Image (tube, rainbow, N blue to C red; front, side, top):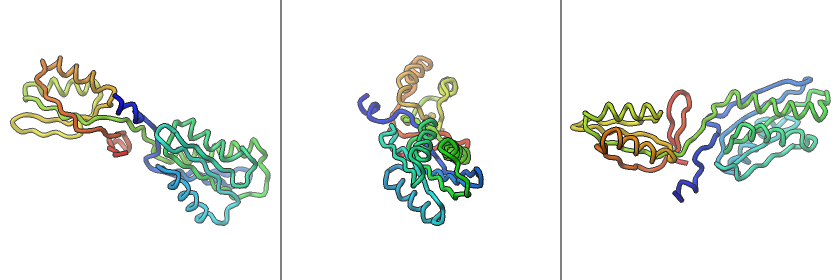
Length: 224
């Protein structure tokens, strides 16, 4: 139980980054979103964008690091305080994202937007970037190897399907072995129901914890 509590049971992040763009009173705002796991990665990404858009008026940023959002930073890069980085950070936090960095590049169009206009523009730019990114919810799960005779296979498969658990591997020999992904907090309940449904004839083996989530219509496994 102590190990489970030391890790986030579930968190939302960016699986694949993207870009979004909007124009407000001739000012061009380009948002670039990228997954990052450390502050060093976030700062390196910011420097990359500054070099890419070296002729831009501003390159503002916001990032949240840690599966429990332990670190959050933002910067206005010369824009009036509170009009760029903070609204960008608020969008990331509002989406429940972590391990994510957003950089919004602005090319000034000659017309001042005012405080409210800047806040809206930077916020909307980040939302546009996120709309073109692939987001994923990662759950902390345990791999369970379930072994049974063919006579119990139907009951086992039915139980897994009813509870909505994913089977990631299977092996058919003189008996059947299924490998299922189960959120750690639901493991005990599932094992109890399998025991009841098969009169304890299914053998179970834990094969370690892993984060998993669905992206692009497929279940992805992660070591983080």
